[in-house]
Image (cartoon, rainbow, N blue to C red; front, side):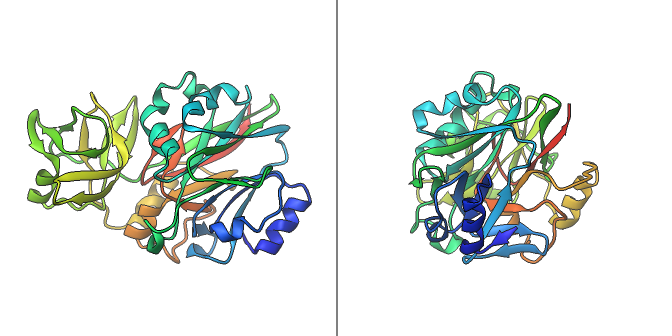
Length: 327
């Protein structure tokens, strides 16, 4: 739910365990307590997509959580996240956009020991799009009141043995039937690619084929469709900037364009059989912008609109959520 600073502070003082999202100046006004937070002013609400610089989105931890631990991780220590998670539970991760931690987690998390054995979900903190490049995204450790530009903040939560956490991903994008694209270099900025085995400048390829950058690259990552979203093209340097890294030995294709994101989202959601609101959910800011989600409802999947989603690994242009089920 969206709450004022005053109402959010009241919940913190009552000892509630919270995940928070909102503007930096709002989060800095909160008292210390059992919470973590990240900066973003865009949200999915029950009334629809919303842009708010005066309220905080509040997720309360479910009552069956039996223990929790808040830890801040520098870039060099991110690989410890799975090891320091509870044996039965889940971890909520928030990382600042364009930080060392963001780049490192995106490029390396798939190699962390035991990453996929414990549910890890979260998001990339951002800023209002009009302030992109002028303000720095932050994450907050509510127990200490500290804000970070380069570190991740994680809340590890424990569940009783009769319960288990399940992460679900809704990806409305499917690979098209066009060219097969691979890369000899990994990263967020790409100069060259191989198109059906032939080396080309990636920026030139996208321009020559008049590719709509609203729709991502899609690849099969170990059985799961994963998106890599376009940020922009540096026309002078002929370099393509991405919101997530591409990897070697992975074949990508351009996504099938969507005519109606909300309709496609509802179609995908109909297969999920959600009986009740999830514990946590987040959606991508690119879906908010490109699909004009302001004022459009996404059911009871509510939460922050983010600069990237974490479902074990970093994903883009998806909606991720976490449910608690009987074990």
